[in-house]
Length: 465
Length: 41
Image (tube, rainbow over all chains, first blue to last red; front, top):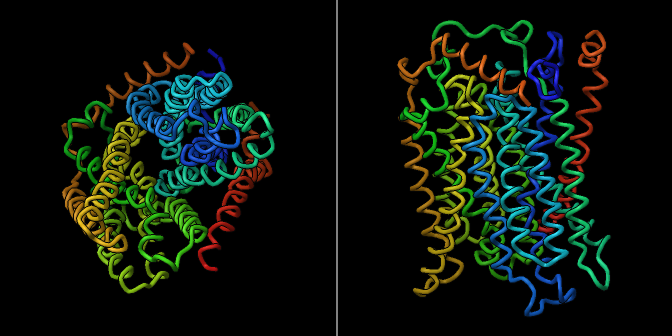
């Protein structure tokens, strides 16, 4: 079988340059990272009929908010359910489907804007786009880990850094296109969605075309797997995706990721308001927007730097640093705020956000260490439900505690103090979870016969496409 | 197979592919940095 999607076509020759694989992964992640910049469409989408200002027939911001929420929800579902399929069919098919869903989602949404039918945006960007996000996010991860067994953290850090960087491209690109297409009769969103859908589809397809998996038994020149017990947490065995769910390690890592993300995502969404209220009169709206931009840069940089550092520090130790340093930072933020020290406040938050990003990029390598590389893409997909859960917990915690405080007479500048201490407590729980992570019991490991059987069924399924 | 092997080992192709992802990313970082500078004014 020599079809476009067959495994034979994506197995690399022996002298293949593995440095071609990270840009293939980045070509996908830089596109889907646009999701975090979707809010730039909210203003124009609320004026599709009125053009210059919202009319009663225009969509409300609360109505539009569901598009992003639906996309993140579908991301979690697609990653959780699509991960197992990915391990069977390989990264090219998965990236192709992700490109069709993400690009197609934009096109359906463009029709929705043109006809002013909100359900088409929910279906297009929300459901279809969300599925593209989930499949695109997990598709290159296990491939990268197999190409870089010597530097797993750095490899996954490069790809997942792209997800952080995608918003930095998506936001100015969207604004540029809307400015170009807007007229007296249009806010320019329809045309922008069409252009972005096509661009993202092409870019993701370039990633799908370029991706290659290493041949069975391939290893980097001059590198041999460590023998003996150098690090007890790094296994040479493989745990099946369904079996991984029966281990305590999966749930401990789920909680560790969820708590680290909850703490970070809560402040990320409220960063602009938080700095303005904490330093009333001294931080302008423009400066607050700059603070949000600076946090985006640290979010992206942290994904690469922390994950790369985990190759030397060890995954468990890196997570220990996230939690210990995070506890120290969250506990110190109220003092920085009360002392009026903006520089210290900004520094603490930048470190916190770098570790929020680092948590995302370190986790696939952590999973590969614990469960082996065979099913790491699928296991990672299922673990990403922790992200969806944190996406609800984080903002709810920050927003509701702030509202409660303000309603009970606490000054707005001090309203975040308790929230920061609660975040620090969450990280203490995360620290305990991480401390409890031990090597997986041998009873969960796959036998060679099971691995061979799975490889044969995967090859048949991929050849059928 | 020989052509494929040659292409997949070509350092120029690797550099071009990296530029393909690095240039838009650099543009995004630059745009964000300009916005972030407002914090220090």
